[in-house]
Length: 123
Length: 442
Image (cartoon, rainbow over all chains, first blue to last red; front, side, top):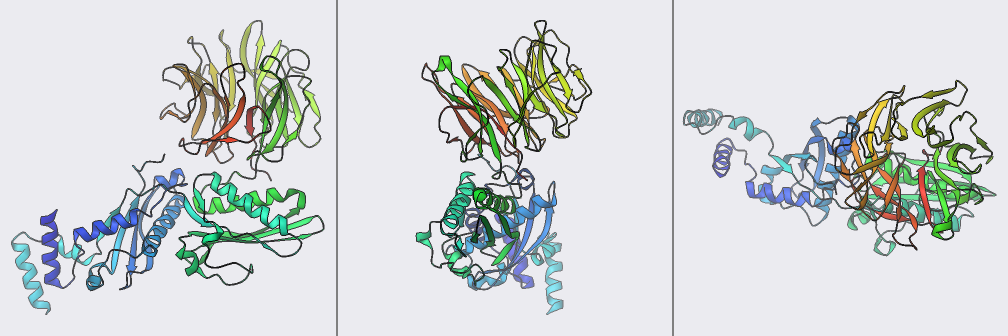
């Protein structure tokens, strides 16, 4: 993985679009995970998967959410998972901010976040 | 600038460094979030505003809404001592930043007014981080002051539904057998209560034993087994008038374990005739008795699938009680229980996705669920004696009887989520058994 990250960083530096480092990605995922709760989700929500494109301001505040990919048994389940995902990001930001460096804003101005509850414990 | 970049990219491709890299570099980073947590959602429900003559009602309705939501185990109410803002007017602005600061995900505001014996409850549920009302969660309900608890349950049902995506179950009733007296001379009478144990009303006296009450799909009738004649007989009770009627079409010596079809027009039950027990169906609009099973073993505890096409039941034809499914028109049935132990009292979920059952194995009783083909069996409880599950109208929660051991053992009512979480006792005045959940009230 580190080799791939090095290649991506190299390419990104060449074409002028920095990428978010793996460690930063992991830190962001860990922070958001703390606020992603599926308690109360119904079976369709638990079986859904969504990719949410989030736009961030330079201070790390999420400013826009778009559902760009979704799969699941029903639209209601997808909608519910999208709402849960969105709240998780907003709550994570409200809880002391997200671990994103303002100096690297170009690398995290837009991030696609993948949420899928399959495999998560429910009891 | 363009040309050198292309040149460099071409060089990188030539060295095998890039592959699909240009596309990756242009796309936003993709991060998989997981595994997440299962924590109750923090919500804020400030005491509803009194808009005229409703002081105590406003406080009590707020309390019941909070109790309903917290009782699911999915929500955690934030106490008023943590509030930064106060809600002083139902139509006033909301300082969402103040609610965000205390980490409330959902804010519920409400107002209550009373005029004579009429009460009006209105509420809004806000997505705090969005700063907007949850779609469809700004409503009002009107009724009599006597029905104030139903107003609260309806408010909680809407909030629960909008947040979880499932229908609610708070505005519902449970019929059960209220017990009194010593264990060897127990008196039993039918009673009905709100799903949370409040508002108990008694439907029969204690002069004869009653068993296994079941609501009709419309909630307007209850069918149960009565020993009024000295033998078990199926009896129909009109909930509104409390008028009782013992079903006449009963040529056998004993009839028991009745249950309505999903359209309410038919009942299925067990009939013991000549020492053998089979399952029969009886149309309530006339049309006679139909025998659905024909086996020398005991066939009992029938329960329809929600679409009315199948019946799950219990049979000991293999030597131990097991669970079978047959067409609603009858037949031998297909065994679906496969684990060790004895299975009984199967009940089809109103969602159609699971069958709840009682299981006895290795000296313990369990309430469990399995898929309708018998797969994914999951035991939710374990105790000296757990039995007789009944489904909440949304198919998410089960209520059942738990009895403690010994001469002083008592029957009590409990509920549990279908994931096995949130096991809790339902408060009743005394011993209670045989619960049956109503549909959501109209």
